[in-house]
Length: 593
Image 1 (tube, one colour):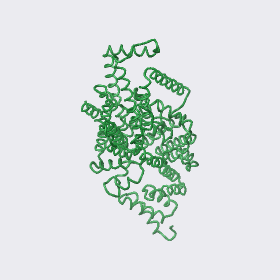
Image 2: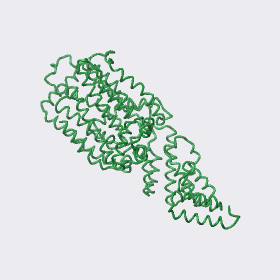
Image 3: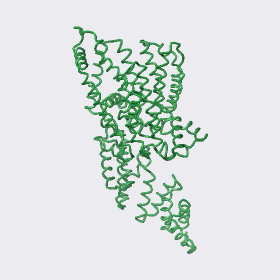
Image 4: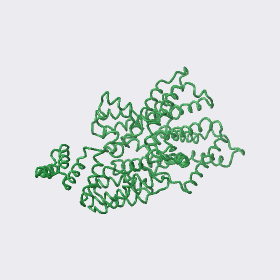
């Protein structure tokens, strides 16, 4: 069955191996923009051991990308293969963990298969930048498997293999910090007692986690938002706990970048009803079998919450409150809990006889279970149907990841769109010359859902919309219109939150070009200066500033800029022609500047 499991996983994700790098969607930050640092050398090894990448400390992840870069170079195929390899390793490890937990036969196979081919795995497997996700999960799960196996050893030796794998998981992604708590919960389950004996022998795991906590906090400083509403973020946690449960069993409307949680009266009502139902279910479980609830169900529920804690949303990171990739590890505990309930449901012969002391709900549940077991064909049809649904959704959703443009287009076709996705798609439309479409997206951005956003975010959206309109108008040669939109932005350029949504180089370049086209050369020179302060070797800014100097008869400065431009692009005809003209003016007489 393990072979069938891996073969099915490979077959489902095979079409994604031909996908390119998603530049602009973090693949550039992990691979394409840092290729020189991915060559194997002592200096590069030390570099990744001492620096953060996109708010994460994960040297082992960078070493794995270093290996791919060395073997495959610029071909993304090898990077995708390794992502899929680690996912298969994680799937096989989960299958082994289920064996250690005494799940057998089709139930074990079905549970592992759901984890392997679930649509929420797409983001982690297909996105090369999420190497950290699949690598960390593979090592995390196998560490758990080695620990479970070690507890079968009557000698009680320290699980060295589990500890080493745990270290590897931590160095792949900080989310592995939850593992010591998971091991302690398993000990509670195994010992059937809530006491400190469950922590016996686990202190090395907890020490490593404690040491790693400040590293994680320091690495995330740049990503954590400056303005945090504790009340809202607490509500986000309650929302996310339910969100990942629902998406596991009803995986529709997946999104590469979900909108921020918008709390309405309907949202509050749904959460209240959902938590009420969960409370009722736990109460009925306690009445049916208190011991099973304490030592089987509660540890699994806590395992889900603990594994989700690092990405629960209590601390807002970036422009999202939740993401499918965050479910990779937490979904394991939900699936085990589901498998345990299914096994219990199927054991009809072990049911206690119905008595007058049983609640009406419990009696109804047991009668329903008896009927379903007697009609096992219903269970088989539902199971096969569920597998068909999730595998089909995985195949369809995976196609959204075949390019950054398709990814952002998918994100923009949902009922509620994250404003970040709108702005990024508009930037790509500018690159592709679809300027009228940019105006549509700018209007969509200005009217985007504002609930869940801080005041500075809302202001940034309005400024971003003006920026997009201004750049599109400039590309359509509507200079005055472009200046009207872009001039609205200038008083806000020093606002820190704008740095996440505004391309300053493009803004200054476009402003310089607009003022140069209407003959205000001194103003245009000032904007080109802004570009060159950031990048002294910007060819376009040098060429255009030189042209502005030429028009104001500053020929010596024009010569200097054209010469520097030619050094960058020795065969550029325009720069060469402009240089000759400027030199002729310099040689024309002593009055030339």
